[in-house]
Length: 183
Image 1: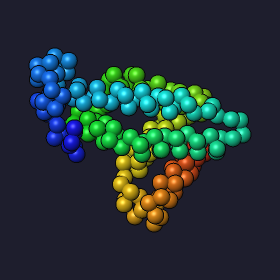
Image 2: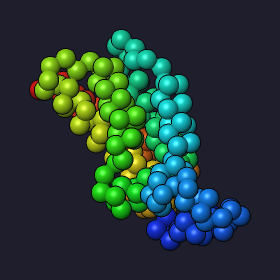
Image 3: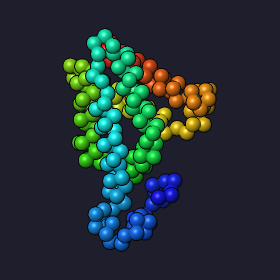
Image 4: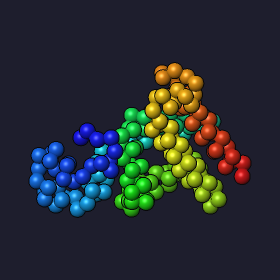
């Protein structure tokens, strides 16, 4: 589908381009948001595969582990910019993450991160959840930037800019986590 923005898509146009009756599409997807949300199912499967391929944290190797986790998520997000734009558009239109995604993806991911990072007290758990969520927002924002924007932000050429951003994100995650550990 050749469109630059999900808001430009209509169910009618999707049915036409798919070569199926509009009523067929509407039978499976009662509204445009549900249709577009279904397009993200494969994205979430790929994201889960990335998360499950990450090594467990190593004792004494937290810095390297954080770099691996942040790097893997940033590289994945860069490769999934269209899906991220669609997710952002849907969140903006609907005003929230759908309950299905919250229960299937977001809450389990936050709970897993807290268990891996070792939050014991209620205050530490809250802080870790917010750090993981903040890092997710930062990774998404940087990943959605164009190559020109990354070059402008870093002062590097197109090949080096993503590496600089990835290193920056890992350093931010380390600082966030160290500040939580100290409180």
